[in-house]
Image (tube, rainbow, N blue to C red; front, top):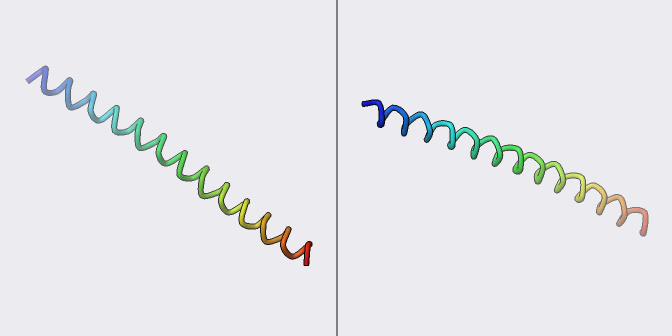
Length: 48
């Protein structure tokens, strides 16, 4: 019982950390992609 509880708790902690890092990386990537797309659009408009 104790070993299973410890393993389950460790698994939950690991999943939470991985999910948090993935969410942060995904948010940063999406935000960076949006900024890059806006910058490219602005550059294209300025060039034209």
